[in-house]
Image (cartoon, rainbow, N blue to C red; front, side):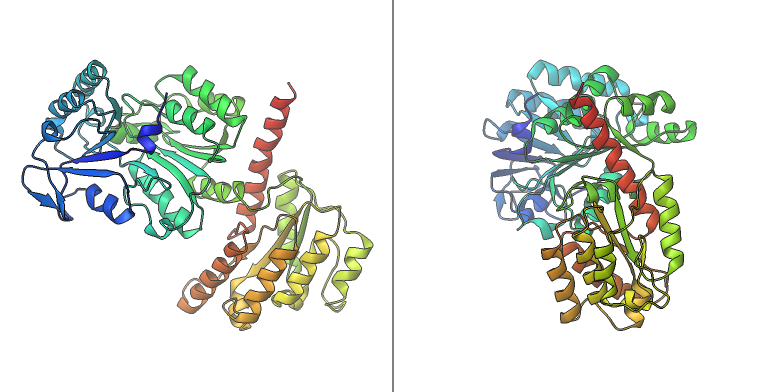
Length: 473
């Protein structure tokens, strides 16, 4: 299905456009203006002569021809009349933000709406969803504006829930994950998740796809699209409604009918999808999947301050079938140049003792590991509490410079763990944010604990190995 005009419309009409906030509406017209959408923009509302300096139209019938995309924020009882008028005007895509359809048991209205759309050649997004974002075309539903001046990223997201989609966009902005396209697709009565997935598979600007899915309408078409996409790029899937009660909750807000999760999960894995258990796992894996330096091997080099942390990391890594090979003698010798042999170890994992609170020592150790052909991935463990307590704040010029210079020199993937244990001190939290932003600006995925880092690496190689196996068969 050709969805180009959906993501790159030359003209957008907002049905039920409002000149102000409130009333339970998403102010799509104002958001498109503020977001810098460059195409023709048409507000439709008989209550206004103009909205935000733009001429308003009393009805769809008054619009000019050849509108590519219409967003409907009007009451549900007007939906059929709206789709009939949209068909007369030959509008290509209509997004219904409006709810009150199958998710409330009103399935007959969905059928009538789809019949009229088919008759008029209109394609429907939703209903009951927040819609479409495309960074390049500046199409948005309220996406964080701090990306508006940046180049489009390489991540796509498909979300059946508007709330989960909003959470994804907010956390992606916080973690500096650059977005290419997002679709909140709701009840998917017409264009379905597999149609978007198929389009994203061919989109060369997208290198990773993440999805939140509650149900699929056609298992074969979905699995075919998944298999095709996963051969080209990672497809990370979070499934909602994995329990009987969860399925009931899903049906109440998108009308979703969920199948047996055991069968569902086996099919996803068989067709190349990477299945995660919760939202945080999905976000961590997205961040890792688009890291500046991709992972190529499972041999880890860990460095931190304290033996206990090293032991815990080793246990978790081994359970995930990851490797911690011995460091070369020359690597250990280089590490020893900056530390003393008291309460330290230059083996792998490396325990730098109290020297591990010094960014220059951490940086030197990472550079040593970078030269060691036995190591594929470097994992430094930072403690926010010690950084703060030792006044080695990353917002200081020297600390920032040390990390950024190291990032330029080290060629292997670096996956920092930035752990924090003080939870009631705003200054410690400020240190965490400053440290996090510096590490992210260096291009590193940053994890908040050992478990998240190890889990994400394991899941990454689950897809990596499956893709290579499929290439060889």
